[in-house]
Image 1 (cartoon, rainbow, N blue to C red):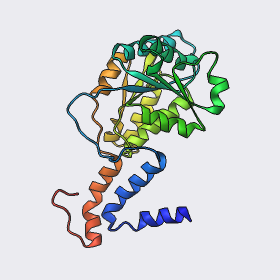
Image 2: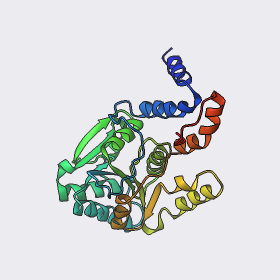
Image 3: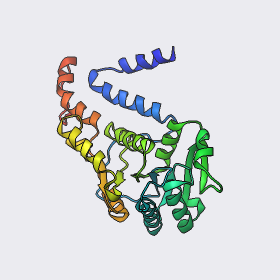
Length: 262
């Protein structure tokens, strides 16, 4: 019955020209039911961004090369240098533990927030935890809380979980759910294959050139943070689709288009 009411609300919000807006907000509220954000607009501020905390997605393993642990620590040192706190996956092993320990040593335990599902605690926490650990019931809750606590997102090397987090947070921005910058720390060419696939998907017409610009990439922590601070989010996919169809929708409803096209 509740689902029926939700569908009724989505299909009876008035003229077609307003429905994309309501659908967008419906899914945002579904994904983030406790989020206090009241607007999903894309502000284009000319001022560089400032970050209180950056969420880092990365592996709970160290990889086969020492360059990955070194990169995690280098990112931690860069965050400390800029007085930026950390949101991470809550484990103290692998790259996850390396970046968390580095930031905690430089800025204190209070500058680090770890978010971990109950079921992963035995696997990803060994010995003393790092920072304030917040336990959540599942993976979706983990990503949702990390999203709310962070102002930007950086992906170090990792596996399926890191890819899932990176691509989901990128998709959320593509749909206009947020305008927070997302970047890959492409150490040792780790993400070259992923970037090649994304460029291929864009060239084949499955990712628009505008949306391709959402995911940034640099090979050093300093350059990546500089790029994230200067980032300006493109119009969301739903905004672009709405703009393209506004005149047609207005004609279908027998309404005049607004002078500004909105």
